[in-house]
Amino acid sequence: MDDWNIQARKHSCSQCGLLFVEKSPCYTVLMNGPSGYQRQDLCRACWDASGGAIIRERLGVISYWQSAYKLPASPPVDPLPKEDAESLLRRMLKQDDPSEVEVRYILAVMLERKRILKHRETQGAANKILVYEHLKTGEVFMVRDLEIRLDQLSDVQKRVTAMLQPSGPAPK
Image (cartoon, rainbow, N blue to C red; front, side, top):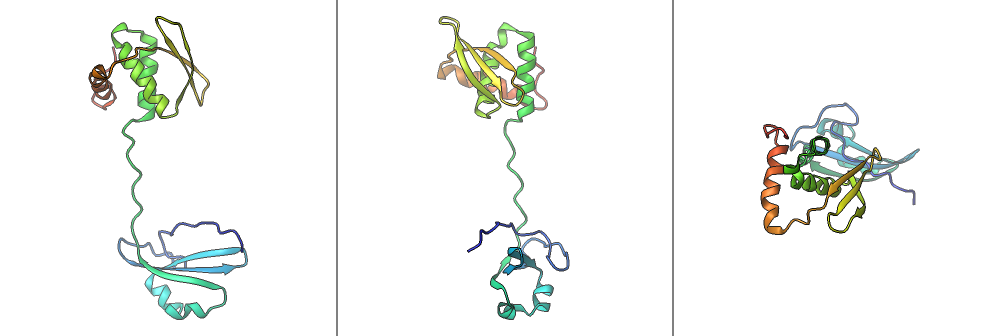
């Protein structure tokens, strides 16, 4: 059996190009063509013109089915715009404001979880410094490890969220 190149449903009819609308009938035909398995998505008119259910009798047709067309789901909204968190951390590291040390730490951890930064090592015993590498650019970021307690985390997260909002306050 040949390998199947998985093909998503098209958003228009394979024969006439008519765009499918939400909940309209869509007929899918899977056939064995000269270059392997092929998929055709047909509107009702093209399905009927092709012979409808007797399409199964055609040479090479493996399967067919009818479904209701669904608009593709919009991509999920990223709660943390990557560029915004990254640019905010960059500005804060340049400014080196001691009152924002907790925010810098949380931003670095957030970017680590987003796989933008990678923790490479921890330096120092008393005042630990976390060394991060930016995975795309190779830049090094050094952020003080605060070892924040859970009861302190909520307030810092609220500050970070406010700063990342489009109307949030600009960093000091």
